[in-house]
Amino acid sequence: MRVPAALLILLAAVLWGLLGILGKNAQAAGVGPLEVAFWRAVLGGGLFALHTAVTRAPLPRGRDLLVTAAFGLVGVSVFYGAYQLAVRAGGASLASVLLYTAPAFVALLGWGLLRERLGVREGLAVAGTLMGIALISLGGGQGVNVTAAALTWGLLAGFTYSLYYLYGKAYFTRYPPTALYAVALPVGALGLLPFVALSAKTPAAWGSLIGIAVLSTYFAYLAYSAGLRHLPATRASVIASLEPVVAAGLAALLFGERLSTTALLGAALVIGAALLLSLEKSQAKPTPLPEEAL
Image (cartoon, rainbow, N blue to C red; front, side, top):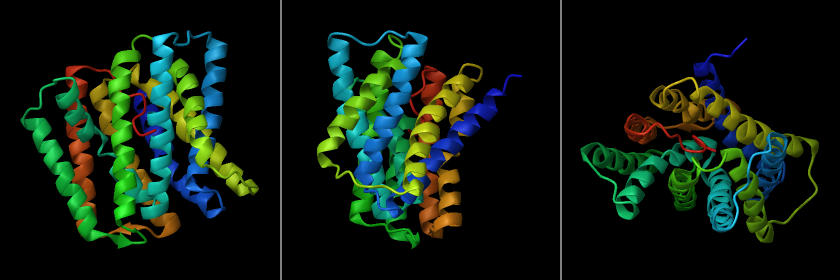
């Protein structure tokens, strides 16, 4: 029996929403944020490598291999690390919302580097994102630490995630994404290794780390890509935008994180701007980002 495509996209959104929750659990169990990112890259990269070997997917070679390795240092080492540092500094809900600044960065990068059109829709979305960040900064909330560090790491995560668009636009039609991840994630793990102090871990810590790699990285991508094959990218973007809502709800339930009314309005502006840009790009060219919030 085939699982409905919309349900697969919703499953991916829920699994991505667990990323900050599991990361916070691992950090509470004594694992540093950069070590969380390291193990996500190691374990997730191993799963994608196994997938690539089983399916005999072609790996990038030559210049494409070098570009993919360089992308691994930025799109995995920096992105994974910044996201977990944002979780530590500000909380899981705030990190998830700030990640959704990525489409605004995509619009600005596309305009600045690719000479893509920056129209009224894009301008409004970028302005809405900036206003949303300002409201979040002013609003704060219970159990949510809106500090300079939290905003810096969260915005860095959003920016580095936006680079998936530039990389994916060039390579996702040339190689299977799983094969590209099989290269990028191990390279990203090597890039994180010098900054990681490996330590003994409890079973609970390993459970969270394995959950991040298996659920929030490997299975989330497979669910999203499978759903997208039978669902227009526009609808997929709408459903996937539930990810920060899932993250915020679980963070409130498990950790007592509650954004204030002002911050919630800011979060709505950020997510709304992201959705506006995602819908526009989906209508223009139905090529998804490699992760909707990896």
